[in-house]
Image (cartoon, rainbow, N blue to C red; front, side, top):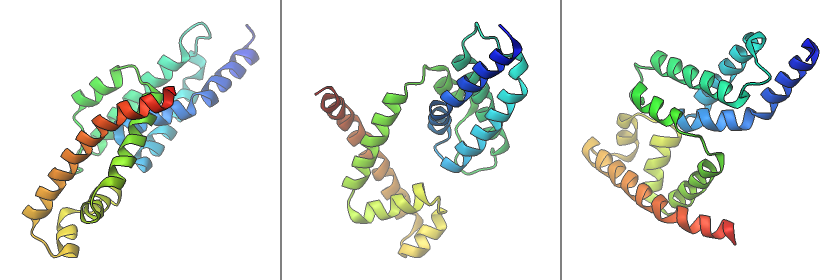
Length: 177
């Protein structure tokens, strides 16, 4: 195979895997901005290592492995953050086969369950999980003690977990029909 055809094949593989690679990274980081940054870093490394590309190898596996190491490096840099997965948990999640359809199904179920939360819980969840507001700021805005907000967040997480576990089978049945 000529060098140009290998380079073209590499480029095609890289472009073709972007959505799945981003979804994989996002599933490990859960923050879109961080996932986009890690995707860019991963793409840079893949391009720098393009000479190591073996057309007979598994490009997807190679790319996902590099992404996994970039996620771990990102988490190490962000260790001072208030919420961060351990390297062991990230390794365990990354080592499992990533199923984009399952991820999308879970995201749909989570959105449905989020929409089903009572207004006051949805407001707290939005501030904490989507806007990444500090607990003290949420307490100040809602004029409630930190224990009350912490307890509410615990109940929100429990409600979402139970709801998602119930919704996923329903959504799977809908997809099959």
